[in-house]
Amino acid sequence: MKGNILIVPGYKGNPRGHWQTWIEKQYPNAQRLKAIDYHQPALFNWSTHISEYLAQQTHPVTIVAHSFGCLAAVLAIKQQRHMVNTALLVAPASPLRFTEDGHINDFPTSPTISAALPDKPLGITGLIVASQNDPWMDYKDAHELSLKWGMLFHNAGYAGHINIESGHGPYPKVKVLLDSLIYITQADR
Image (cartoon, rainbow, N blue to C red):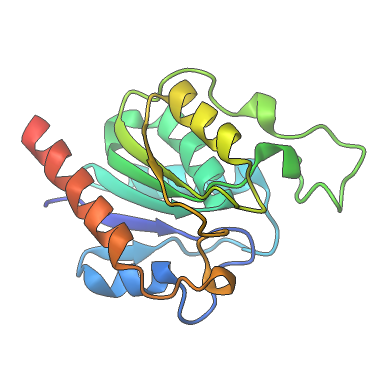
């Protein structure tokens, strides 16, 4: 694989032992998105950082995002689809929980970011992994996003938010899914 794997954490980042930290160690070409304040989930700021990273690459990138990071990644993919090989979006957070400035609890009178997100297929092969009991996103809503964005969908069962709190440190299943996506997209080229 020629391009890098970009790890995009979610709101509040990834604590030690998170599955994204484990995934990052599984691939020598994996890099975590830096220079973002993970405690300030501002959609356009995060998306701009992802877009800037993509613009600096010489080969299309594979994106592995979690939670709010999925939403920012999707916006960047919409703008720079040609620089994205594939995307694995794990436990995306509901756009109804965020405003342009941050978490809805901090900005309760501001509109949500729902209208800012793409409402058409992204034009890439990608996969959304969703849990049936994710407190951050209703399972049916996650499935709707996969249809809207033209992505494959994987039912992770009752896995919570697929993070440390739900018991997901090293997560071999997500590596299998990522390897499969990479294989499929390389075969298409």
